[in-house]
Amino acid sequence: EQIRCIEGRRDISGGRLTTDAMTSQNSSRNKCFTCITYSSDGAFLLAGGRSKYACIYAANTGNLVKKFQLSQNRSLEGILDELPSNRLVDGVVIDNIITNPNKILSKLNKSSTNTNINSKLTDGSRITKPELISSSIKYSPNGREFAVATTQGLQIFSIDDTNIFAPTDLDITITPQTIMNAISKEEFSHAVNMSLHLNEYDILKKTIDSIPINSISLVIKSIDIRMLTYLFTFLSEKSYP
Image (cartoon, rainbow, N blue to C red; front, side, top):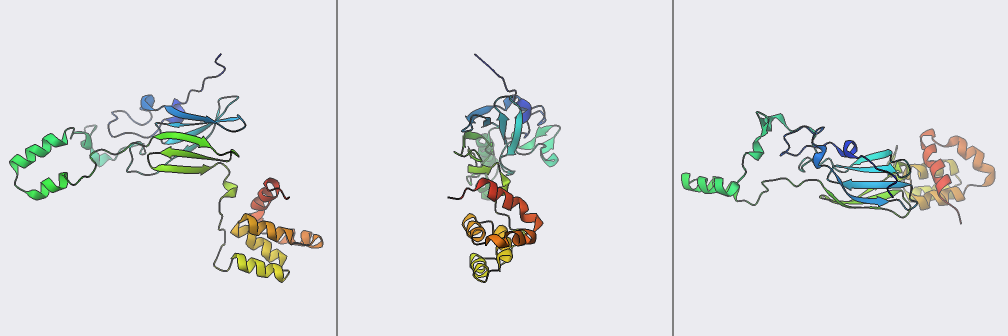
């Protein structure tokens, strides 16, 4: 029994091939999902395929939760929404006029003795550009990251950007060694702020564990307000043995 249908053509539309006679908004007839996977808890559905996007849907409602663009590489087909105007003549892409390069090459060989022309066309360069396609897509066990096998290779994305390395005001003086030195000198406020900027789990855990109970309120008051998000995320998601 079918319980739900997700219409994803609008979500994955975008990106025009050089062979498309339509704009990217109207060329979604060739866009489709070819690989789908559920999150470990079954709450979300991740889909990708013949599109430059990967989409996350809520499984119980079918609503689009988030959409990721898989590449900005303009050398691939299906990335640009509008084709360069200098490659269009009366709405026809110049690159598509050469439909049979072997035939044109044979004509050039007969009509010209210039070896430079022949070498340019037989140098092994691509006549057509590869299209960006997702062939496989998988969630991580914790559901916070997912991997996509695309034309470019294996790409890994994170849903939670709070775990990404954030070098806010980071300089060469902030190192694990300087943080350990600050802890040994009982400069806990300075050590915590440096640990949050460095954003390494082991260093941050050791720094927080070293703070005496009677100094916690003072250290909290000294934390950079821009780093509070990272601190709260660390305290809420990381469990202590």
